Picture 1 (tube, rainbow, N blue to C red):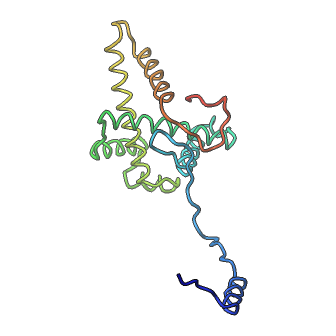
Picture 2 (tube, rainbow, N blue to C red; picture 1 turned 90 degrees about the vertical axis):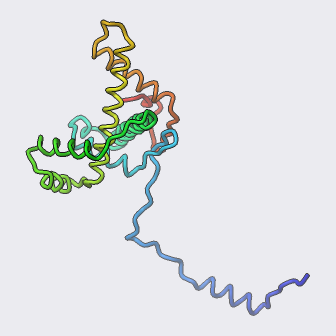
Picture 3 (cartoon, rainbow, N blue to C red; picture 1 turned 45 degrees about the vertical axis):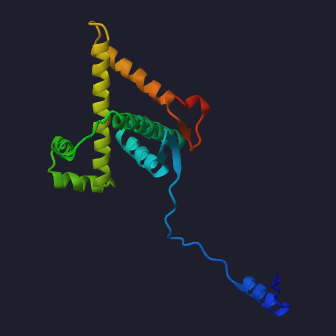
Length: 199
């Protein structure tokens, strides 16, 4: 076999080039990559999702607005974990929300706010909420509501005749806790061990 050897002059030239090359500067305008906030079965909660949800919680609830940033982020992640679990279950059961139903629901939301649909879209934009994201969030909410209704009805029918809607709701919450406990959930954000309960 032929052994490749470099002349000392070539080696010195390569070394000189390597030593004089300036390090590549990071682009200060570059968008940072998203991070995973939690793993939920085969799905993930992204940090950007959690931060958006935390912003929504802060603006929607005075109690959430009083929370420290890490506690609010944890609450947002827990909220998204529960949502993802419900969506996974809804998809497993074949629950879907078509565009017609979604459009009617969004039109009703706009009407309740005494706005036309274009004015509602503009109001969302002024709040920093992307309309496409709002549509998908509404679709997910409708799917979770359909799952809740289905489970509550199933539990009422399976219970005794004295079962009330409140008892069925209590059973549904217990079922959600079971679903949460049986799921694979891995937090990728700092959390206190004592706060790993469903909220």
